[in-house]
Length: 115
Image 1: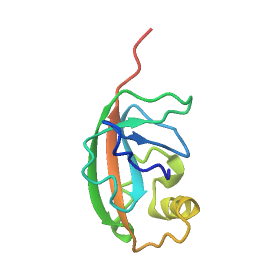
Image 2: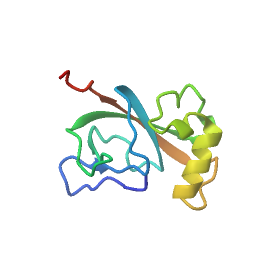
Image 3: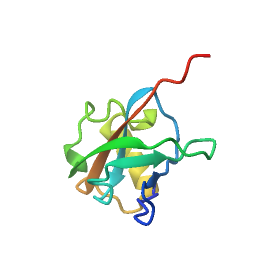
């Protein structure tokens, strides 16, 4: 989760401690505002591969303003409510506080091709 955008690359790579994703909308909440305004992203997938470029929609807010509905599509099932997400963020970002600014990042994954 701690991977930050690498502005030297044309499309930044977003890393994940728990690379579990659903088809359709996925949400990832990141500490701070470094991802705010990033328009496209590639995801670090569980097998080490990178996703195709995906559109990224971002918004900044204080962590303590997040609701369960903001987190309904959180990619990590343990983070789909504020208490669970707070536990995970405090593990990844030592000293993280509930009043901290976060960036809510939404991206959409296509359905896998039918075989």
